[in-house]
Length: 535
Ligand code: 3NM
Ligand code: MG
Image (cartoon, rainbow, N blue to C red; front, side, top):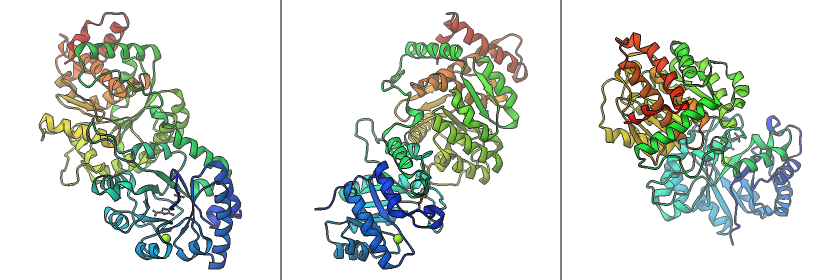
């Protein structure tokens, strides 16, 4: 019978100086087994056959003690000589059918794939599992074919889920650049959402394959056991989410008012940090808005500060408005720090469709981590749809950072917003005369606001600032937090625009900051009739 395998923490070995150093591979693998790796692949591209067999035998005896399957990379002959549980074949190795003929049906055969076509062939030829990669660029293997990212892996998983009985059954692991800081969100992001609320979710990735984060670790057992624990626990940014959401799918106005009232009070009583890595144009305005809503702003663009700031329980805004290579490096550091700490991150892909540098920057940021909210105008969200692989044509060209005339009906927008939210497993907000916000299952349209908001610089950016504070203060239901922030912000804009002394966008700005402040204080004091304006 074919051995049962748990693919969740798949160790791939490396015997090079750069990763193994001068340590003994068998001892290192033993440490990894003690730490909890669930399957081991012996991968050694340079040793002589005699050494390969000798080492594989020693590894097999360690693995057997813990009932962990041992797989040999490339070398069917070595696997046969050792009598271990299987082989792993790259695209340039022996073909699967020949290997199956030699090894028989009781051995595990895995295949490296980086495309739907390769996955299709491997499944047809009877692979038991697929090593899908390369997820992220890695120093461990320089000659990888393609860096396919989360989206490339998603596409293959989607294909497997929707093609045949055999493709639904094949096991999957992803490989390339997986480590303790990105593992939880990779698993989270590769969870395949249901295509309809009633159907059960399709199968997701079965495991992560790791080389350097285990073999190259100073304490191998500790590294492996840390990774094994991370696999079993929800990512930090989900830890505070409640099963039952604050808002239902079709909330009544009074339910929205109640949830918003509660959120405004929580922001005021907790004064969450809003850490803005934002463009030069809006720094001052964003800081004033954060203070006015009762939050505490910090405008640090230095990624090295983010580790400390992420511990303060606040939220982060990544605004792509000044996306220089230097800024992007700092953004990535901050994203990793907030993902690890669990604080919410708002991504504002300013002008994302306008230039190829910005399209590239958006891809880079989406690959850097998990965002709790992605917000933008219609053009920007369409650019996100392209970057996340949901819309495949790359033809549309955004002019400047303003939204331009709408090209879509409200239903079409709602569909796109909902699908990106489901794909990215996050909240997506498309701003406009009517804002559309969704977490992939619940989708709402909010019609509050005023046209002056569209006539002042940074109103979109500072809405992001506002929502970062709301999500930090109210992490139990991030969609409800986003809606509360939107309503506080947009209804305040309506009151500001109605003031007698406001004559246009210039006089609107100070009045708006006043109203943001006053409306919050009114809620705290129980004078919150204004919330009845929710549209
Ligand atoms: N195969 P690390 S990437 C062995 O893409 C291997 O097929 C890859 O190493 C592929 O965990 C890779 O140190 C190396 O990034 C992964
Ligand atoms: Mg190979």
